[in-house]
Figure 1 (cartoon, rainbow, N blue to C red):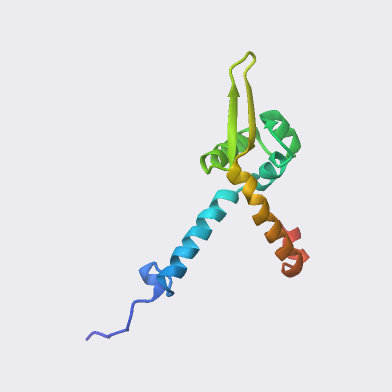
Figure 2 (cartoon, helix red, strand yellow; figure 1 turned 90 degrees about the vertical axis):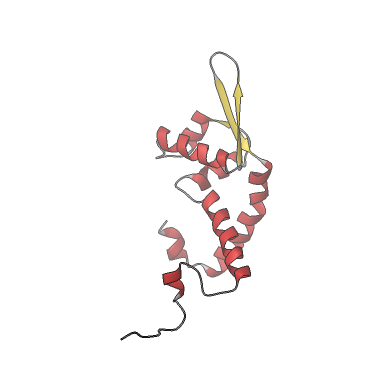
Length: 129
């Protein structure tokens, strides 16, 4: 005996049960969120919004971050095109990081999210993170 259960549920197919346009929209939004979310990325972007910084300046500016984690997050942000790494050929070696044009353009997104969160996100939710 077999049963016709109708169309395959969205969860089983791996696709949302919405239009292709909305699926594409969500995919792009998720790609953008992935580029900026992660432990310490917000803090790094915030510090770099003040101008170029060397690795140890960033490390001192973010209490609790390990050298390994900072390096990993910087690599990830560079790969995402949000920061630029400048390697100066001198002794001792000097490396600086700064926001790329894409990183600078995030300011308007941050401002909009800030305004939204002040209005709609309960303070208790914000304070937990």
